[in-house]
Image 1: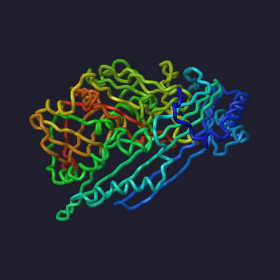
Image 2: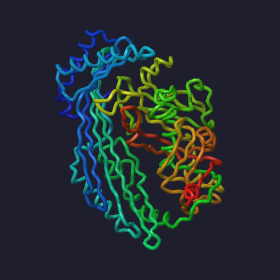
Image 3: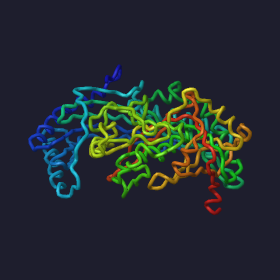
Image 4: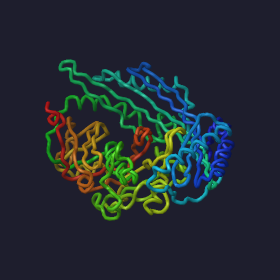
Length: 506
């Protein structure tokens, strides 16, 4: 892989990357490690927040350091440091090996890693035009303020919260097998929330922009790069006013046309997390939970209807989980998780792949900091569209009595990833194949297999959108990862819809 016209931050390349790696790997070899890898990272994070077009806060932080991970006598060891010297690399490696030796008597099984080809001196940079970290904070704040003023000038908008979150992540990796990778990726998350208050009743409501976070640069906020900001900001106030005066939904069973801006989160919670193999094996049981999709069901579990084709992918252009190589030197790949409605694959790191005899890892190891050990994390998990599928309007036209669901909001799912409910930014009634205005206080509820089993039609590629989140949490100590989920507009038949006000006893 190559970086094309984009370059890795020269400040990162000027660090003693190879000296640190060479010293650590040499000492690990001397101490008899079966495996050792070194990861040097510089992660720059910037956040700018405004309230009613006025600055509310900002952050500019850097996480710089290195971590050494070893397998010694079949046990893991890990240690890290912010001091980038060869001497410190030797000390940290000795500490990692000492921890592996200490934990060996407590280990119930030997750690072995699935094999992976060697990648010697390779570089990858994610696709973007303008590094968002290089854009001055004043420029970021000025654009958010201008957008906020547009919303505040509209009838019925009382307050506006605006923010942009940008990250540049540089990683140098080397291991005893001879793999040496250098990569850089950026991501950005802009968000505006409008607040409307009914002065007579005191009722209030909010509505958020639907623009997803993305693996792009500052160009994403300037238009013409995947999102029409002017159009969304222009329509948001009227949509919020309509929602504030909308009738409360009548609970019952409805056909749902779910927009990608909402469905991505349902995929994340009910498919993405459920098919992490470490979770399915019980390794996350005491914190992040387990999964109903256990390994004994691989190849037989009917996850959904025959239309359901879900892939894991670390190569998706502009995906938040897209990389050149993962945090243990495995090249990015795409693979099937659910095919023709049946569970056919999991998300794997090297240890999980070897443990279960599933062959090569599919590159799902990630650490969110040089001070954290790599753990199995989610790829870009996406529902594939129908090659010649209908438009969203055509899906709506095929529904006599239903709801059109737009934008994510709150959600709840059990520790097995099986029973869930989701709300939305907007629910529209569908009557006789036409949208008939918004309703509010709605949530759809199902079990994972019932919900995906009710999938009756997929939109075409023209309806496909890559959504996602910056804040997927897992592991102890806790780590946060960014991940994207693509999907088309989709039709689900006979889904239970709750009235959330009635459910709350109000």
